Length: 452
Image (tube, rainbow, N blue to C red; front, side, top):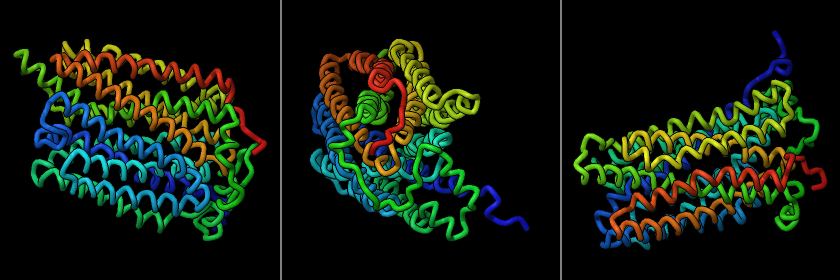
């Protein structure tokens, strides 16, 4: 019988699957509030005045974003210090409890409190996920693996509209938070049962020497198995242009995803109301289905986003050029959302199609911008740099939530809320190209840092 060490096992994909499911749970919990916005507004959770409800809802969203940003200040360093296994487990346990806590909120303040608790704990997902992928995959496979686990965000966003409205209608809105929050507790069992470092799995016989060598096949990366070795300070990391490239890339583009995540159901509900008011009931659509369609398309974008640079690299293109070329393509596609409101006048599904393409491009972009961290930094700094970028993206999310609240309040009072969305779509469509240019100017090549 052929010895295990001579075979190429595929345990790294089991690890990728675990990260995928964690990200699915992350976005399932995160999506519930947006789907119940109309229900909660109707029972007065965000005040009685219709225009002010938009503003108060934005305050709840901002509480999540502020807490998420503050969580990112330290979570990456905590994960780098205590290790991926326990860091990820603690974060997911915390956000599951916070998600369940929403069921006990009775006011805008209550939802703001639990939203903040969710934000600070959910901040752990992407630093832990990114570090896991860096530890378990060689550079040429990381974008593809990242695209797969990042597609969990879309799967969570698909499951939510197909289940949350039904649960809320049949059992009450409180149970929508309780049941979705409890799902994460199941994941913890499989995580603690399955996850260890590649070296530990090699010693256990679950990982072959061939796969272990493949994981560590990059010539420019040292093998670091002990996650508690020397750590790098934020102050030192901020001295590199590579850090600032990731910072601004996330600051410009993360808010766009946040906006669609929290306002897409409200936008589609408003479009339905507008068509009914105009005497065009045939244009009304099932908005939960439309939201699910958007994120189904985004799932494809996430996987293809990681596949394209891998294909270009396998075809002989330099890894840096393949990454940057792919990201430029993904930065151009969101411009289609500029036509969402105009096409929505003809048929709401046309608007859904434009938003779906933009969300797919975002996920493709996201798979690659996360991978630039492990392209440019040694493994010991990956979670910390990811945390810095996540914090900047969260602060960008705060700004867009604040702007959306004020803008939509203004146009709601005028009876033309669709104009507010049109302005926001201009921001959403152009942000990626601006981000790409900034990143290119700061880091013309995603050069590996060797002096950390």
